[in-house]
Amino acid sequence: MSTENRGFKPKKSVALSGTAAGNTAICTVGITGNDLHYRGYDILEFATEAEFEEIAYLIVHEKLPNKAELAAYKKKLQGYRDLPSGVKTSLEQLPKSTHPMDVMRTGCSALGCMEPEDEKHPKDAARDIVDRMVSCFGSILLYWYHYSHNGKRIELVTDDDTVGGHFLHLLHGQKPKESWVRAMHTSLILYAESSL
Image (tube, rainbow, N blue to C red):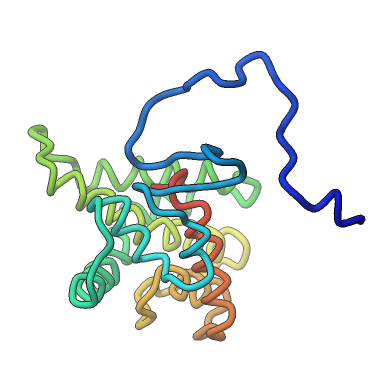
């Protein structure tokens, strides 16, 4: 590939090019080229250095956490990883061929029945719901995976202090390498806006 082809290339114009799909304070894409900003921060500056929980906190709480806030947030997320037995039973009914997105949707729906939202929906309760989902989607997916593929009911509580580390631990059944956790942070950060 020549060096001429490595720079930014604008996409060809399409029918809806330049049309706003919606306005949000959470994310902007492509304002100055190939950029991605969450709440005004250039995510490329964070993608290889930050932990996913820092960016989740930024998106949910509208600011970057200090060290104490990050430690408390990570501890809170750790406490949300396990699933009620009714959710596990629901996941056990899904066949091996189920698409992973359908598994997460079904797990989310089952969890919503087991842990219904407050009808008043105060802001703090809404944040708690987002935090619960951030924390337990990996548990939902991997509980289903291990049960449907291996007939195994796995333990969903680990001592990993990050979402990525927890996911990898459940996937492989052992504490993951730090380089794998770092790669998970980068991936989760780059997809955070569409998953939170």
